[in-house]
Image (cartoon, rainbow, N blue to C red; front, side, top):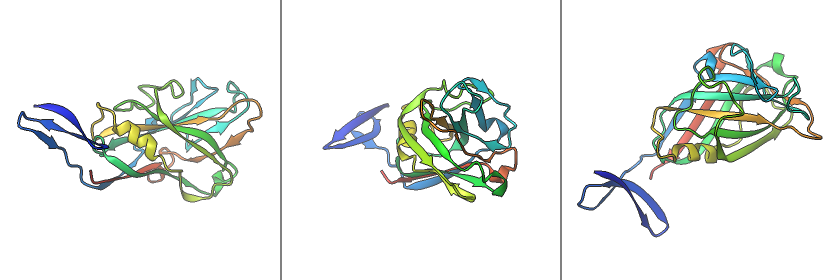
Length: 215
């Protein structure tokens, strides 16, 4: 038995060949809700190269004019056990963050979102370099001021999740990492965003919500 692909018109189908024809793999529509589940799954990197202690009580990306300045920070979220079928047709994908009033001054996001382009993302203890990780071609700009409190949603990251689960080595149950690469360069203002991390309260840790259609 070998995995084969077949083009029918403009449709690309994946299945298995048994010598007696093409047997398409059917994926039923479904959804999966994942949440950061450990201290090593949400953390920051400052000055473009230095991993901060993982026990921070918030996720804290911050843009700045100079990448090597203390104020510049990138972040990563790793979502474990993502029960998403290989090559599923992703129809909806976003992250959720929890914020309360003590964090309100830090409410401006100015980052580019990427996925870590690997089949099974490592946590920040095993791979502490955030900015050096392999990135998806798909990216989403998140530039928003005055983000509110309670549970807030990210922009859609459908294309990022699609690229990850389309990898031939992806398996349902693997981990997905999302990179928050803060903007920097001449004229880029200092903008910071904070949301609660797993270490504050596991119930307030970031979530990843994904839906896919039948295919």
